[in-house]
Length: 80
Image (cartoon, rainbow, N blue to C red):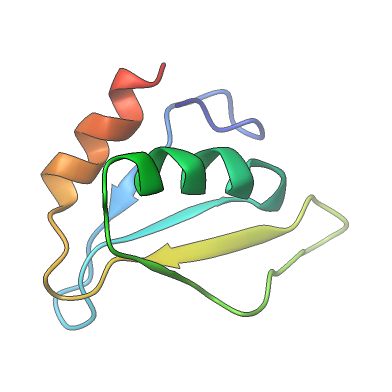
């Protein structure tokens, strides 16, 4: 999937303590959640979105320490 703000692919980040996560524009949350749900990926969404300097709001999806970053990245990449 392509990030609407950067026109680059959405990238799953990694945190050694918390596990993989994904930062994305709030406007794309519904489509990304639908893809994750279709593939039974466990996640939770931060309760707040952040907008800096008047830019579109960004939200974070967390996958937890058990999240498979490579699998999630592949699912997003396959979606185009």
